[in-house]
Figure 1 (cartoon, rainbow, N blue to C red):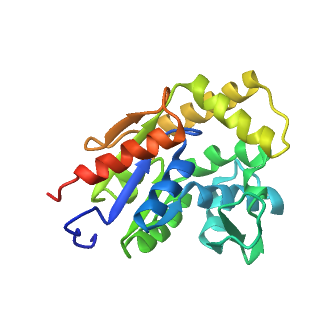
Figure 2 (cartoon, rainbow, N blue to C red; figure 1 turned 90 degrees about the vertical axis):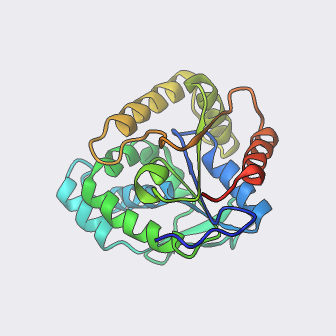
Length: 235
């Protein structure tokens, strides 16, 4: 059960959307303005994929990946290094903040996240964290599966071309060399997997507020969401 709503603002905010729609950046800024914590649930699936690749567990071996996920220790803590990161991602106590963003992980995370057992293991952890309230939770199935009773649900969307351009700029800034066509192909592949998987597919919750970011910069998207929060009324 979610905590009771405050009189002025929602305590639990779910932000969903496809890959490279800006969830992490927008969610972090919204949480900062509200004085809330934020949880990017995609980190957990990236951690599973990263550890599978690191330990030689075949991504296509559902049973093995599920067992790995069930025993994985994933933690997100305050950033300890000023290198552009927003937080540290620890996998079994080891800093893997940038490893989980590698091209190899990018190409495997959707396959890993399809497995029902992996999603059950990660969902239980996500709900436990969110139950504390005053939180912005980001992902692809937050409003529909993880937190169907979230006080406020936002669905961020953008065209695949716009999302690819944004992802390309992010990767170039980190020193990774990608081209636009390959980035579009990668995102299209992820979209198909995320939206057609049997367990917890990517889709907007029926009561989510859609925000298209094609023609909005980061500050404008944050302002729009803060306006939605300002106008929010508990049911």
